[in-house]
Image (cartoon, rainbow, N blue to C red):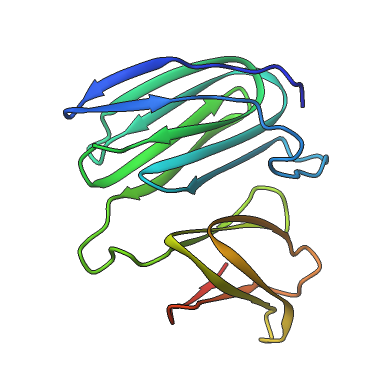
Length: 204
């Protein structure tokens, strides 16, 4: 991936809020993607304070269109990034109305979309937000966790027969981990447990 930096200084005022968008090329240390025959990798990771990071990587430079749509399918933000073969874009929804939004990325390699939910209910407030995303690259999964406070997180990965094939413990309030599970038999299951007693099981 080239080291060219893309800077975006565009502010959109909508719904009595400002949607800030900044773009930067993914550095080698950001996310370790293997070089293979996969053309495109696309993921959306929730961070903190209403920020979602859009991660995109293609094999060759291309003009990429980034759109954010509301739950009615109306485009509320649009940005074209030229001659990019990869980028990481933080999109800030702070001040926007709570609800479901769709983040779209389209280019010559294809069109990709991910639905996200911005805002928490009173019952959800303070609870960690955990997502497991199956990436386009075979056998790779992205686990992300965002919490209000840092804590110890236990992660276990099981194979089709419920055998534990990997286990680790991490500390933090914002985690983004890519796992290579191409050698795991069948569909893997993720079991995540936090110090606060929250247990999440995800089968992907």
